[in-house]
Length: 404
Image (tube, rainbow, N blue to C red; front, top):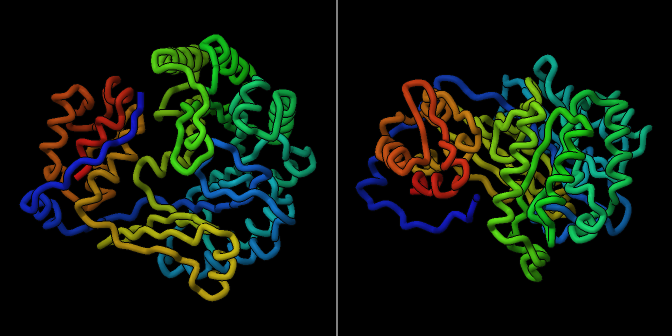
């Protein structure tokens, strides 16, 4: 099972200087994705630690679309000449926006940046916000993939999770998705409060029967700064949770889904291209309240974060002060940052990708790689670096090796 990464001591000065002495030199820039954050939701779920805010009054759709457009305009100098590979509308609940607002925003984005042919454009949606006409408008605007937050088909568990929908609405949302989208993901959670192994099996069986192209199955964790962290519910024990994970993986494999990432399962050729770009340490520009960016140039990698509060973000875009934090990634952080993403992929990544995406020589982390192999957490040859089956189960133990 995946556990929290413990804090480990920093390396001594000699080891740190050895890593830092390498200059970042990227011969080619990675693919570039665009993330658009819509921060509002109907109700904050007790397990959610994302930057989401309950609707208190009407959503300022027009003002927010204008701010997103200006945000991207101001970011253009960082990405001149580059094309967008994927777009992802995340939240919050992006499906609270109208079809007209999404259409207007996508038109503005296309006017500012060239999109790759057949770009994947994903929108997160929650049951309870599904209206056939709205989702028909989303599809007409260019959205070609949905990610639906089902979480469970059990009304008792949905209530425990604080979801605004019930199982009937979840099924209706899937029916509407089928009408307008060939490609959609279902988000499920397991290890829910007082959930049994039989109930977890029932959830995954119904998800498979719904015939999505992609399923994401997440272990419920009690994140800091959430209501569940302050008032923990009664959860299944570790052994039952492990059995749930095995049962879910076996059911999905038997149904023809390929387990390609820690929590992601896809039909052939239906991987989430936007997320794969993250895991392969690609670049992304994030716009919207609290959005993060990772932008590479030939000699450095920059990370940014926008202001989290919607009002602060809106005011900041107007004054050009919406970037709350911007920093150049230190060279000695790159091994962990790369592996933290790449080792989520069950089939791993090409050996050459490490140097291509970090500008560092693989020889600089040879001792770490050897240690991971010796502990049975990693497998590699001259072509591929991949987590072993044990490494997939104890991913944070594997990642700790690269935390310097």
